[in-house]
Image 1 (cartoon, rainbow, N blue to C red):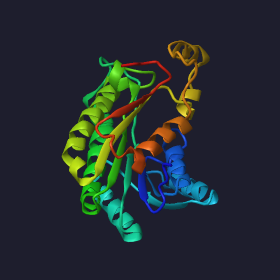
Image 2: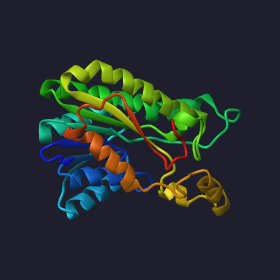
Image 3: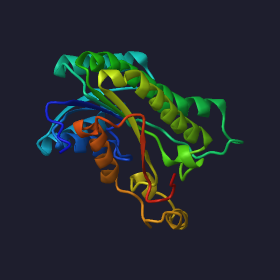
Length: 252
């Protein structure tokens, strides 16, 4: 089940070791997809590509600035040139900033929205034409528990707002493209065991864990597994939804 053989997947923000993008890329490759590793950090991109290839998978590294329409178009042209199709888009690229509303500048707000929402828009828009032509596609975007509970551990109000926008945008897009065999869904992770989490002071980390019924952070593999399911043919009747992955820190 959940096999992705002969499919092409683009994972944005999958070059960094600090987040979950690399694990997502490697998981989709393990399921048989040819994975396009797309990120600004080309050293990280190549590291991810090598890791996938070392595990026997197929991968292509592409430099991508999600906030640039030209960069997004160039990435898509490269994918179509090499693979001739795109079946899966994972909008993983994102940034955060821990700052209060009082301290926040308009530039801060713009920077976070440019990556987390406008970049997601550009990438999603770019894959629609090939997905419509092939009457098949999976668009999966990373939201956050912060979007649903009004704040989290690391981000400010601009982060929460941008991730809430991801949910609304995805639901609307899901309605627009469902008749073409394209599903649009989100995952909303809570605290995840990444380098960002590990950099927290012990007292702060303990306070966060105290608010999670499961008593631990999630693992990147657990987020990636949910994405692999949503990317599969078995998830064809799920669209416009979000999967909360937070150990019980937020339930609705």
